[in-house]
Amino acid sequence: MVDNPFIPQTLVGRQAELHQVSAILSADEDLLLAGVPGIGRRTLIRWAAKQGGARVVEIDCLRATSCDRFLQLLAEGLMSVFSEADELSLIQRWSQDQPVILQSSSSGRATLVWHLSSGKEWALFQALLTLPQIMAEWLDCRVVLMFQNFPHIRSWDRTGKWEHHLRHEIQQQSRVSYALIATVAEQQIQPSDLKVVSLAPLKDQDLQPWLEAVMTAKGFQFEPESQALFLTYVQGHFGDAIALARRVWLDQRSSLPLTVIEPHHVHRSALSLVEDLSVTFESLILLLPHSQVRVLESLALDPTDSPHAREYIQKHHLSRGGGLQGALASLEQKGLVYGAEHSYRIALPLLGFWLKYRLG
Image (cartoon, rainbow, N blue to C red; front, side):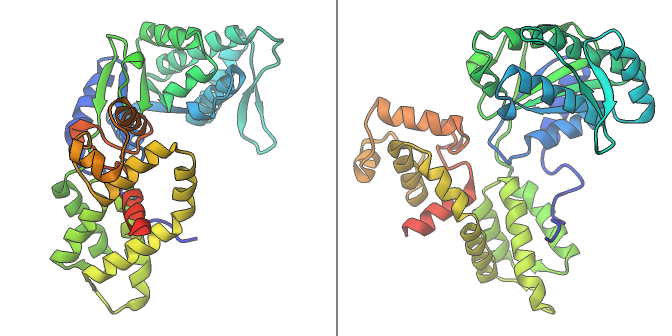
């Protein structure tokens, strides 16, 4: 497997958002970062934390199917961040008065383990939430708890007890902030004191210098038309830009001494990339209701900033009224379509390209 040399070592095109997030975290405030998958949400949090000398503990709530699993992921996240010998000594000292044991796993890594009877999970949760503040005080640093796919916590925390306590506890801690990663900034996950930052697609003028630099480093140069085509295909989505740049490089490096990337090279690489992704895209489409698939297909074939227009609905045989609005809202929550602020376009450009190619 070939490593991806196009993952940047610097932050690309998010300086304004970096300043905003850094200010929030340095002020000991908490954050909701909204944006579609692949647009750079976690990368931005990591850079802001690094700028402020903070440690980042990452927990993917999509993997937390129960309170037991959530506790396990929280413990694993903490141990992956605080893993040096002196840090483990501090955790060992802390654990002596807690319902957990620090021990080495079969792989030699230190882990937190516990043996609790049913109903005792709450005490363990309270104990684990104190550890970030204690470590931050002992190590003179800050800690950011980053919860990805945060709304999924409600699949098992139906009364909101765990979520409420988590927020309340961290708000009381002077060296710990939390960052919730979500697709859209839904009102139900926005308490009044939570700062909200939404990530829009990158502008072409931000992507262009990165694209030129990484391709030049590999011995290639874009023609103006091929660069414009590349930017059209990725539409400011950085994850798709990295994937397509890598595919162009892989497709053309066997053709050296070819050094100029022409439009047909970009188009051919885009086609081969979405063909590789077709199984994933097909699986995604199969999980969607027919009404949402119709909206996606319509936007792929005929982009518009007015999907509610009568003529557009009639042309593409879409549901009227609440049915269309519900499909658009659901697709936006899934990170597949942007809302009105970004003209209702498909949020994952390669998915849109694949749909248009498949239907065309």
